[in-house]
Length: 335
Image 1 (cartoon, helix red, strand yellow):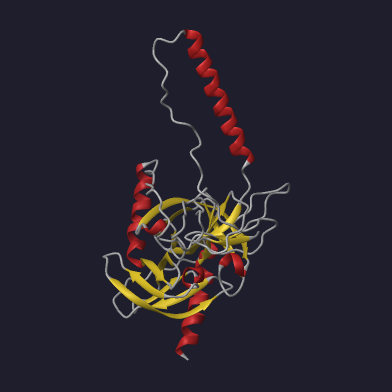
Image 2 (cartoon, rainbow, N blue to C red):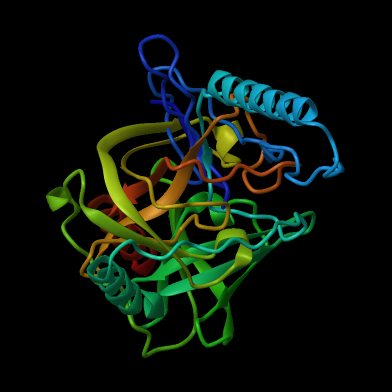
C-alpha cells in the first residue's frame, strides 16, 4: 500500500483493489501500497443543492410532479458522481496550516449508553497525556498533536509535523505553553521526540499493540484543524497496512515506510502525532495519516491550498514500534 503523511493532514498511500482501489494518503506517512498514489484531497462541495425552493403553493399538481421528477434526477446524478469519484489516496494528517479556514465539526454521540461510557472513560484517561503542537517557521506554520511519554517532559509526535523546522510550541490541556527542544527524529518511521522543560506530566500508558484485533473499539484524541482535545471513536478496521510515502509527499528529508493500524475513527489534518487508544485508554498507536479520494499528490502536508479530510479510513503507527523508536532516539541523545 502506498501512503502519504496525514498533514494534520496526510501521509500514506494505499493500493487500490484488484481493479483500481482508492489511493491512500496518511496524515501520517505511508509507503507505496499495491497502487495508491499519496496526495491531499480538496474540500468537497456540497453534495446536494439547497432544499428550499421559490416555488409557490398555488402551482398545479403537474408542476409538483415535475419538480419531484427533477429532484429525483438530481439525486441520481449526485449519487452516480459520488460513486465514480471513489479512488483513495493516502495523505498525512499531522500538520494543519492555521491560515486555512475550516468550519468546526462536532462529533456524534455514541449509539448506546455503555459504548458512550466506555468512550468517555478511555478519553478521560488519555486526554491529560495529549498536547497540541504549533510549529512556527519562517515561511509557514503548522499545527499537530503529541503524546507525553515521560513525566519529565518527553513528548512523541510524527516527524512530518516538525520536519519543516521552526519554533516548536507545546500547548498543554490547561492552556500552559512551553517551547520545546527537538531531541531526535526517525524519518522512515515518521516519528520524532521533543522535550519541554517541566516535570510532573502524566505519560500515556502503552498497550501491547500486538494484541490489537480487528473490530476492537478505539478512541482517537488530538487537535484536528487546531481544535485541541478533540475526541473521536471507531473500531480497528484492519491491521498490518503497509504505508509508504515519498520524501516529496511527506515533506521530509527521506521517504516514510511503516506498517499501520487502520481505523474508521475520524482523523483530520492536525491529528498527526496524536493518540489512538483502546477501550481502557491505553496507547495502541500514534495517528499519522488518512486515505483520501483525491489521487493527486500534495507537495507539503498541511500546507496545500486545499486540505484532505476524513473519509473513514485512517492510519496509526503501532504503539510497539513507536515505543521502540522513541527509546532509541532518547538513548542516542543521552550519549
